[in-house]
Length: 67
Image (cartoon, rainbow, N blue to C red; front, top):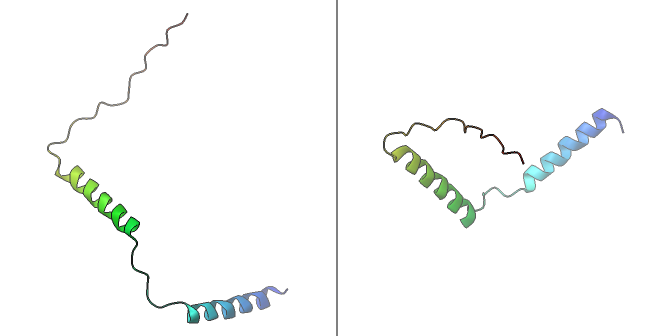
């Protein structure tokens, strides 16, 4: 099939799909709402914590005991 014809058919099919697609978005599911609520809660906990604690830095490597 010629590339231009294929592209034209693609545009026609895409236009048909856009016309038949529902215009309203479905209501957010409970799982989505719960996830975003947990993200918001985590961000509030991080931002409301007291003075920041210094990080421990990278863990020091301990020599592996050999037998």
